[in-house]
Image (cartoon, rainbow, N blue to C red):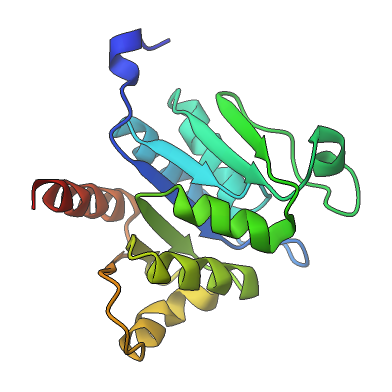
Length: 193
């Protein structure tokens, strides 16, 4: 276990993307999500997720493997509602703190996005698009895992067509470690600006 002084959190980085509720996600995608979580934890950053299955859950597993801390924003009102149908989300991983919002997926997305310094998108569908639009509107540092599929492969194109400048910085890379490193460098620059 890390000593108290080593647990100082540098930044809060969200991982948002495919939950895979309707289909099995490719193992390569899940491994990349897990590596994102590992790298976030190795960098002494807090991982934020929507406390769901799929890529966010795998990121949480990766962070937990490295003794990282995970903050999961659940759409449910309590643990029973979180784990039983119709929500049916997984139990939290080690070192995960669940926040029960009771606001459903859309309300959860607002809270999780607002609490991030940066958000990484990996694959995803309509819910991920909602999270992206929130993060963009809030002027967050946004990372895109290139080649992960889904809405993430369209984010850079979508962002290029948005007329409003919110201060958002877009970063992309196909390697999870490089992406996390670039995001942290950008957050440091913002801090020192």
